[in-house]
Image (tube, rainbow, N blue to C red; front, side, top):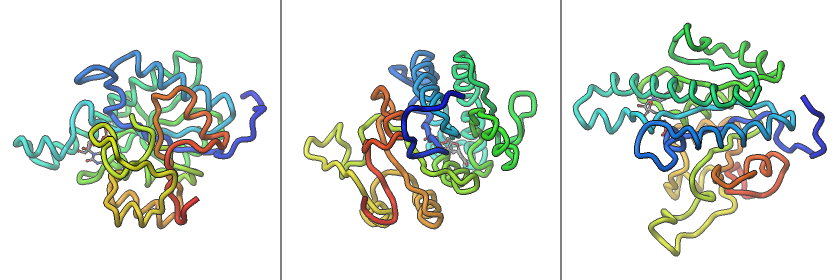
Length: 245
Ligand code: UDP
């Protein structure tokens, strides 16, 4: 690993990427171009010596809640959703490894032919060795989300921050694509997010971050170098913490 000429603010990060982010301009499935772009952005922070953990969602393939509305039993639909995250994890691993960075997929749903089981100590060891770790299978439990998995893994593995990638610049008072006058927040507290019912993460995930004092930065992954700029301490996106920053 190269010694960085930048001062690194966040040395161990957990990047949460939704399944939808992998859609790019497609309506379903995975857009290889966008996956390659994301992999390159991640490689830039790995080069700086940052320990990178990733939780990937599955919403581009299936979401438990909406599928159960369409007649699939909720628990089955949730397991289908968790499997979708494994598919996305493999796509991302493939793209990152093309950039010659060793990557391990650790899954909460056992799939030994393609991923290691999630074991905290193993994840730590991979990070110590400079490998990127992708957590698949969410928490391994139905009725949860991959945001919850991000909060959980960030807590267990002592991440300095959760970087929640979105297609907009941060948190707004309303959907900025629909409401021109939506207010942008530079900084929020966990309680603001809960009380204002802002759609950042689900309540269980936010509560776990609050309990363990893990800041969350919501940012636009489609803006080139945003990820790198965040880890070197530039103020980008919306930061959520115990007090306004
Ligand atoms: N899921 C689950 N338990 C988890 C994580 C995910 O049951 O711990 C299921 C759930 O059905 C969810 C789907 O997997 O809708 C895909 O995850 P998510 O919706 O969080 O993906 P994202 O919105 O990030 O793409």
